[in-house]
Length: 193
Image (cartoon, rainbow, N blue to C red; front, side):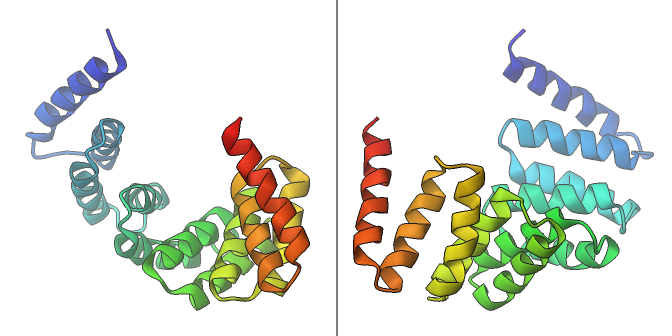
């Protein structure tokens, strides 16, 4: 049985169970995962909203809403749940990171940088956060500030093309044209490979 067939059967089974008036949060989250696995973000979000109505402060439910929303390029629902989630779990770097990404998608770069800086303080060596922070700072034309974050990310993952391209942009922004061109050649060489 293929993965798609299994996912469709799982959705059918969960949908049948969903007809009963006593759906649990766990069943709704499973249903959302099944919908998400076949690319049906709208149905996944509907199941998660039902789960949220039953368990409004559930970390699992709020996190799932944020992740499905971001994957669907719908930052506003993600921000709606990530904002309280960062207060419920103030030490969770992942939620600060996701909030920063959602805010970047929504175009609120000032607040995105704040959230990403908080995520970086909580987990200083997380490569995804370093790259996202560098990208957000570049978007605000804060090139000097972005360079150390991007260089640290490249120390951890030297072949990260997104980080190399962002560093090229930052180097160009601060006037280091030769370095920017060298980095740009690395990006182009990797795309030819």
